[in-house]
Length: 231
Image (cartoon, rainbow, N blue to C red):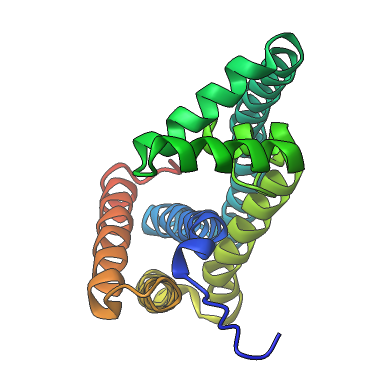
């Protein structure tokens, strides 16, 4: 309708943004660290590449499995709460109306208005109103384990591909500094991109991600050089 202003808030992005950034960051840091550690142990280029590919596959599968289990647990809890709420609406509708009205009253509405709002919302969608305002499950945001698993695996693989591509195109003698430098560039870019999407300070986010990535790769390189073996 003319004159209606629809606002878009950055908080709407926080769920997918967190998952995508976490997966890609883990993919870059873990795979680059693995590649640098193996290369620092003075192994051949083929061994470095195989280790990197294995790290990509194992990491993506671990991310997918972990996210699936975690989100499945959340989904099970949500479904159990919804089932109990559905039964309570059947057993004692008046109590549920009073319960919802008390929630709105606690948020600042006077008693009569709170009850009127509760009755109207429950007439429209009783379970949805209680799910949203009593259980804290937003409309359309129920847990999706399969979707979360694929998203985490995909973002991890995308991040892990960056250091692996460097291994393919860089001479073995330059492998450690090249992977280190390229990975830091991608980490800084990832931090800046996520900060910009979330409305946070860009330089602070980029610096934070770069620092911890450099620390992880530096420690792994030191371990590989010290022991001269594949970790």
